[in-house]
Image: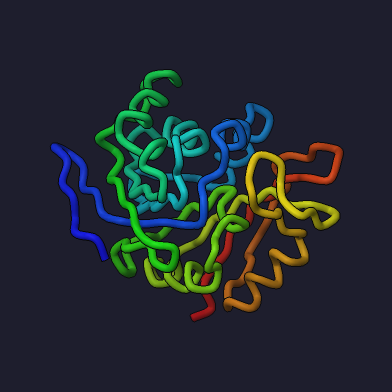
Length: 215
């Protein structure tokens, strides 16, 4: 494990997944059409302890954070070229300065562990990342480790009706809904509720799930 790196007001540890999504795909992941659905589904509160997995350049998270300016987030990813305080501060500036960079603590890690504190978070957000995880079982087990008892894992995924070799904009194939739900079942994760957030009318669509750990 790498040593901790301290910034003036941010703690930087280490986290990682396979490869991050393309910037365009992250940018398109929360459109005006589905943002209200996602925001209502999450129902964030300043009292929540929130972790965001695979934050990237903040294209998905910053609109969410703007909807709850007092919320604080532990954020994490692998690619320091796009995932850093400067990039997220720019994204905040471009979207109205409702949240602030001081609300984010930055972590980096490995493909198998988040390096986040155990049993800290009552809400863990994983947006358009599951299909990119190289070690899905190990990462899902680690995400359960960081979750509080009775906490929820919120997963938003781009899904496909028919399997593809790889998704547009990334080097990883998207999962079918059946594959996604089997992955959850195989890892003792129960889906409490779900909602479609965007249907492209072609082979891809997006859904958001609230999940709990069964152990």
